[in-house]
Image 1: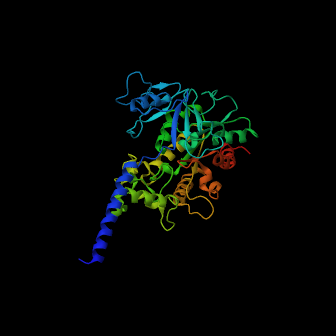
Image 2: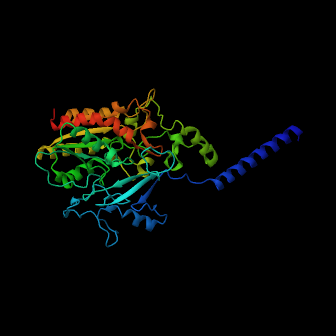
Image 3: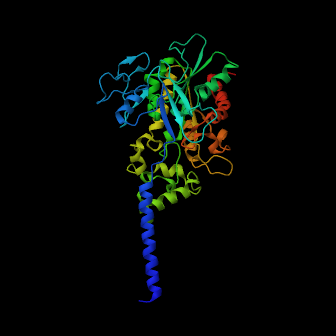
Length: 416
């Protein structure tokens, strides 16, 4: 064997040994990324690691829907047909969340806390207080079921975008809008009924019919976030496949070299800077609505296409809320938030097709619609997030949309 061939074999063997050594060392030292968000109870005690203690921790401020396996003595939402002052009339959810459907316990309080970059409005621990009144709403403590004479009530339904996840209560958009309207019309009251156990549009309808309609609103506004309408592989965004964690990555996107944790993480790190930059040549709304029911992203979220726009479920629920309002002498309107992705000068917003579908439906059904995309499209997406690990709208985003919402709500109430 020639010296050259021996040297090449030695080099190859050395390279393999070094690569395997680096791989084993990396796997041994590799640690799970720190959570960007954690919770503290009313006394600022952090959530414990023990699963049983975690359950007890959350039961301080969350009340589950009645279901098998709930320990005796745990207060739940009312059973279907039963009623309580704080909740209203109990009802069955259209689907059972494997983790258990929950709503906010009346009079409860906790803190959402963030690691990493901090907003100026976070407290000294990097936290935001979440506090709920006797109706389990993140709203004023003196709210009453009875509507005082002459008062014009706006009821805001929706998910965490309406609840105000990650922002102070006094800087959430329902409060900002009420403040702006009351400067001209003191008789207006805006009620925040967001995020009260409802995650999908048909659940908003049930909450209106069984729970929040008791406040006798003059205007009902349902706020839609795009993750109410189509599946995404992130909670509040859609990532490029290359930037996804292993468990979120479709099998067909794997390559042979991805058997190496070191190379996988290296490639993911390189893709992280453009993780939210989706291909402008793809119709992302159509692509996501066409995903088959057995797709990994549905399985990871324990969901099916039945909850999303392609099934017609959100459309039926919107018609149902419109009809409830007509029966109860109220107006009905829809507000749609963009996902805070692809926003800013020179960026491609990938979900315009979903906005167009909602606008076409509302025009056809005679439902007033406000699209908040124009108010945010020119803003750098990073400037609108509560945190890089929590892409809910921060207080700056809330302030940007509040004037547009105030005009829209005034029109819905017939105020001039």
